[in-house]
Image 1: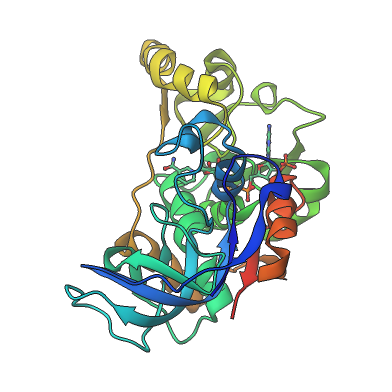
Image 2: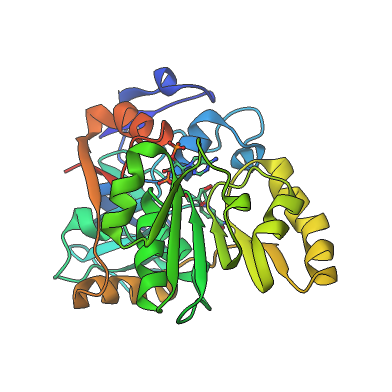
Length: 317
Ligand SMILES: NC(=O)c1ccc[n+]([C@@H]2O[C@H](COP(=O)([O-])OP(=O)(O)OC[C@H]3O[C@@H](n4cnc5c(N)ncnc54)[C@H](OP(=O)(O)O)[C@@H]3O)[C@@H](O)[C@H]2O)c1
């Protein structure tokens, strides 16, 4: 099978296409013939080995040679203990632990997969598991009239998060680079901020801040929160995340605010509700661009260098 592989952390130049034997599923694993894989910022981070948390499982060299978590495709073979799927089933899921979606076949535990709804294409389905869940859990608790700010709102999770917060009746401010301001407005943001021109922590007080790319100090985040407001981050620099985990909880507690890192709960029970909203027409899937397997380096750079508005998909089959 054709697979995009790499053996050391680095820029996209470390990626190459190789012909590998098709992997065999064992135990509760299934082999998926990949139709489409969406790109997440986490793929870019694990390609580069930065931030440091992206090296979990492989401090010096990558734990897995092929990236690509968010897969959609056909079950092609099943391990002896698999009970939920059989060859031919159309599935999708976030294979964050094993990855392997930038290849013609990927091995995944059956527990991370769900049946793909017929109403969604493989490309559409592949956009949901990781970004949709981050958005759903990240906006949980937003309510009518609340001021919600989403930092990094022009990317994959952000485009879902804007819509989910609007659906809950919140007034939404999206923060991202200047190229994405119109896109964030079109996704439903009431206000937009170019982070290179304006510091959102000085732009007002918010009831909920979802930070997809945390780099600032705890005191800046605290300053941006209204009384009883909540700040939750899901990614960013390791020092910023550690500060939120340690200082953040104390600073928040002392000042009637809550600051924390959101450890996203993954799996079908968490992403299928997002797919249901997409099928019902309550949530739009924004696919900025699609790429081929040979173009995986360009696809990763498109996301990692901040050019993607919404999701980016690699059509494999
Ligand atoms: N906590 C968990 O369990 C968990 C699990 C999986 C993933 N994650 C994390 O969740 C996040 C999801 O990202 P995604 O896939 O939605 O990424 P994405 O599609 O790349 O979107 C991130 C956006 O943030 C923008 N950005 C970068 N630096 C910024 C800054 N300083 N201020 C404002 N915006 C900035 C990017 O544009 P520019 O590059 O142009 O600035 C991009 O538009 C990642 O951080 C990932 O590591 C967390």
